[in-house]
Length: 185
Image (tube, rainbow, N blue to C red; front, side, top):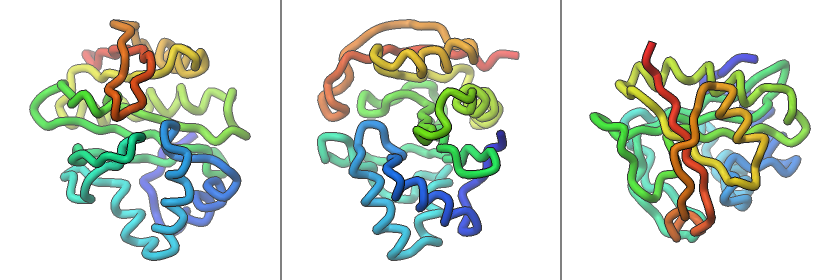
């Protein structure tokens, strides 16, 4: 498994996954069709927007349709002989704190036909040095209590459950588990 910076060279594999029904946003399945349209319009701009450490790509659309300011972020494609999913890191410079409309520092999604292979676990461990490099001392990762596979991924990487809470209404207002993963050496 490798993490690849999104590129035009690999965009056909990404589009293929979108067309097969995978969505890069597990809270907004319609994001797949939105991204296909964006890629068809300007693939180069789409690819460059995925690596946005200065948050210049514009607002983020939340599950309820509202928009909020983008945080600095990077996204990497999970690659193992083919496109297998993505993992993203977002942060607020100078602090580990995140706004209530941001569900954790790290989010990931693996295509359904490659789940259960340990790819998400490997990707999570692989992106942690990037989190440390942007100055984070720990990361928060959230998941649904109805997603035991994601809980296992986070725990395998060293995450510990810190709380259960109700997500912001803009994020669906559902029960959420929050894990903390220290980046200390």
